[in-house]
Length: 193
Image (cartoon, rainbow, N blue to C red):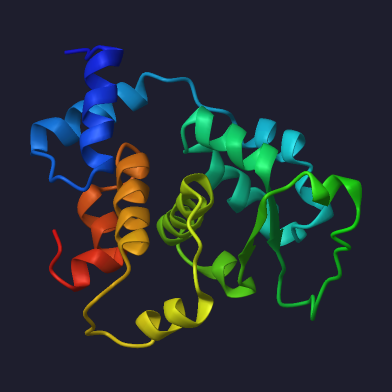
């Protein structure tokens, strides 16, 4: 069954408000999204010009992960964000934010060099999660994020983290098992499902 754009917007609005979705509603959102044409990894690598701030070992997995996301999200990230992804051979990098190309960007997404050695599902989930923060305009406090990452049991996870996990699962569930994706999401670890 194909859902209408109007139903999709209503379900998307419900999800954004934090109201729980039924399994049928989750399915409808995923089905609608899967009908949209996605960018190929090659198109993303070319259009983002990933070579300037992304290491060679990160280019292919990053472009692949971004290709799994909706067009509107990829377009937003390309227009508004700088992606920086180093590898273990790069001890550092300098980017002058006075450069006119960088001044057009609203922010940057930084990926740790160890990410590119992980399983594809973990790469895809991490990229999608961080992209959600940029796409939704979250202001993320890195110290607060590290506090949650360093422990297995915690309470009071910021709503932005929960939303980032949920949207990452939603966007990627047609490519990876929803159950496997949810295991990667922090909101499951605190019973907010």
